[in-house]
Length: 352
Image 1 (cartoon, one colour):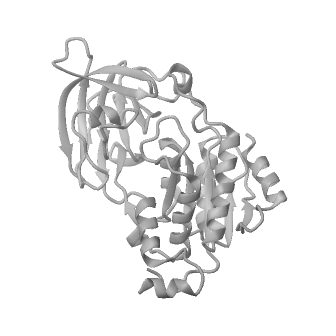
Image 2: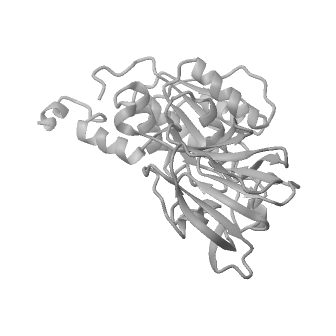
């Protein structure tokens, strides 16, 4: 643990306005995550960051209402007895696209943030991971399929993130290094996924979100939990693998009718699908695994991102050097043991 926490610590907040509002919310029985609640979460984060001494909080502007609501809250000031960090919105163009998340993250890193809080789903975290340059993430689930981020109260997550950002806790003791999957095209890196890479032979039409079981051919996962939602649940129900395991899992899939092995998996909230499985195997870090289709689309963390054809040699590689994420329970336990949130003269005697 750090002996002298930083007094100039800065934290970035990436809140995706579109998270939790994709087509899967319409075709399944999931609820929409409202803009108002995202704003409320951000102000609760301000209270937590201010309590542990974070000096500045950076946010990106948007045209969906989050920024305007946060600015109004900042104008009113914190509730009596609380301290908020200085709040600054980055001066950057807005496209209302994934480019905003990438650009905003890069600009936060340039400004020296020592932590980034992400309000979104798997897709939002994947984008932030591409540009965070080793800055630890604290991920809060506000998307549709949420495997990488956790469901946490924003206040507690803000405390954990702030303790790491100020140096009261070190990244090494309070954060996890995650795995990732890298997709290569003709031997060159193309894109990454934090949870799963799924290959489909279906033509890429309509929404980016992959929520139908039609024509799924291969699935690669960094980790898979039996109680997960989304594509990784297929692996989680057959061969669970933890976030801390050195390996991942790959599955060759098949049409469910007639398949010798089938599993009923929740591909989205309230949306069950029967998936046929030909083979399940572990995958080791650094070993390329070829994509067997000659034409199709690759979905990264549930969203179609790469279309490929016969001239493309596609492969997937598991890598151990993904983004760091603050482990909230671990951070808060360390804080409790060390009395980091205790005040007053009695605190020192309690340590003994």
